[in-house]
Structures are given as C-alpha cells and as structure tokens.
Length: 119
Length: 111
Image (cartoon, rainbow over all chains, first blue to last red):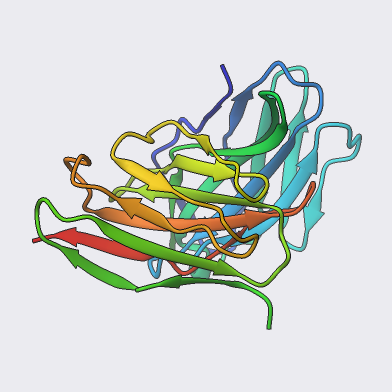
C-alpha cells in the first residue's frame, strides 16, 4: 500500500538551531515524487521543497534541505537556522502514478509534525 | 495572477442538507484533488481527477461526490450521507511532475 508516515506529532527547537522532521514512505513504484509543505495557523499550504525518485542529489531550497535515503525510503526535512516564523505544521507528501485503465497522479499526505520554535 | 480559488471561505450546513464547495483554477493544470483536514490532523484524500469527465475515489469518498465537467472546475458536494462533515476542506491542482498548488480552504461547520 502507498503510505506516508510522519512519526513526530510535535517538535520543539530553539531559535537559530537546526531541526530534522522525519518522513518515511511506502510505494512499489519506481517513479514518484516527494514534497514538503508548511501550513501556518492561517491554514494555507506553502510548498517548500521537492525530491524526485530519480534525483541523485538531495534537494535544497534556501534553509530547507531534503535528506533523501532511497534504500531506507526516507525523505527527512532539515531546517537550518530556525526562525520564529518557522513555527507551523509540516506535511510530507508523495506523488505516485496510478493505472486503472487510464493513468493518473495521486498525491497523498502524512499526518504532519507541529513544529514550535522557541526564542 | 494564476491560482486556485475556493469558495466560500466559511460554510454552515444544517443536518440533512447537501452543500457544494467550489474550486476553480486558472493554472491550466490537468489534475485536481480534494482533501479533508480535521483539527490537528493530516490531509486525507477524498477525490481526485486527472482529466475532464473522469475522477477517482480517494481514501474517504463515502458521503461525498464530485464532478469534472470543465478542466478548471472541480466542485465537491458534501451529501447528507456524510455523518461528520465538520472539517477544513482543501482543493489542490498539479501539472505533470510539479508541486501541488492549493486554494485557501473552506471551513465547513454543521449547525
């Protein structure tokens, strides 16, 4: 079954420190994509970073990096130099291809990690 | 500006009523999705559609229905068969391998 697992319901981090948010996934597909989104209390979903299953290098976007370990099926998000504005819910997501006669992309999410940055 | 528009932002429903949540995108994206989010929870997939006039059930489709008559529109109807519809509903769209773009969400409350 295709599944995203985030085992950390909540995390605390001190301002200016780095934090790692865990994400493991399960799929039998060879081609898939992994995403991280941030959801502040306002409810909007903000795209942070993307990793394709065939990408050999870990993705980076500013203070965000994705630690992609394909054999272990993990895609952890690393936030460096945490800021107070990083306090939010963080979701890991996976895009897989489904074939049912046609073909479609299916995008599934984990349960999220609530990050609190302390001054 | 291109984006996804969900309306209304807040919706109140009496028990036994059907209500329809609107989702419109002008990004020319092929795929569209509906998710439900309960407080402190993740996003659960209700329905998704890759092309016009075709859609698939997600993990929690019971009590919901959708249509995809136009590429840019993917309305969600919450029927009276959905016993616990109070939640935050998010619509999203994607194109190819790209990231999902989301609407601002609709908060549905049963009164």
